[in-house]
Length: 394
Image (tube, rainbow, N blue to C red):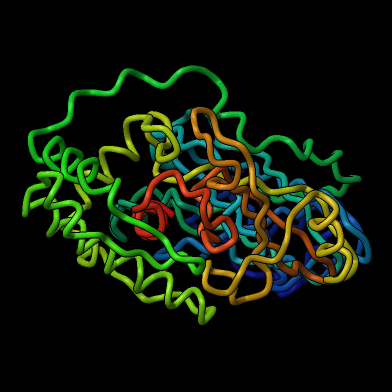
């Protein structure tokens, strides 16, 4: 039977299902059709809506739920397929995909019997208006002819939502646990290129000095008297020039725009250090970027989220270190195998959600506020390494 619209709205808060008689050609029980309403508005309540998607190309559902909250709640959205194996569903809240029900195909199509996809997904929401949408991803990879032959569109399913008090937030010390879990894997031997660069850096480092502003100078004459090669001196001058460009911009409190090509001459060594557990310069195993962790904490004002971060030992990140937005915060942390007390940090970034404020954290990672710990850099090339690391990995 093909569904035909009744032109009546479904009650979205658990009302009986509205069905219609019709002719052939849809993903519904024979002779029955779900009547959809378009936009369903809900305030501080759950819902249960038999619904459908009649968009046979993109799969977006016919209904959208606009949920208005007056207090922080944890939303659970559950999607249950109605009829034919092969449908599975993506759930979006405020444009962000929060989950996908399992794809149980094959079989695929209304000519077959098989398990029907379902799933539940959670998200903590702040007060305000939130939009919930569902997309039938079961159409992906199937052409219009196949969809029509199997009567897969329109497709019926049920979307329900429930609200609960948010769970307690995670402990504030969750950062860094992945880095303390165990010893790093043994480092592979360096390539000849990396070994040569490391040898040249070691040869010139004793002849690099810093002034009170952190600006660097390479004593070329003393290095030559000590037998340092011209290749090492050339490398040293390039590293000092790069560091001094970064430092000069930092003193002006702006972040020097750099690209990967600015680091080509030293990148093989930096990459080896980042990936192999070199003291003060590693991410174990390696990982492209430390995990960013949502705090699970919400505040009614921007002032209160800032005060909370400051109570945890964070401060607003300097502009030259990426803090230009004013919402980027830094807290220095110790790091295994690194003697510098400030070379690593945890980062916190706060943002507004609805009518409240929350934040996430990430770390440990090389601390880009290198002016704040002059004289305590792990080695003279540290400013360049930190900028390269953030440009490459985070």
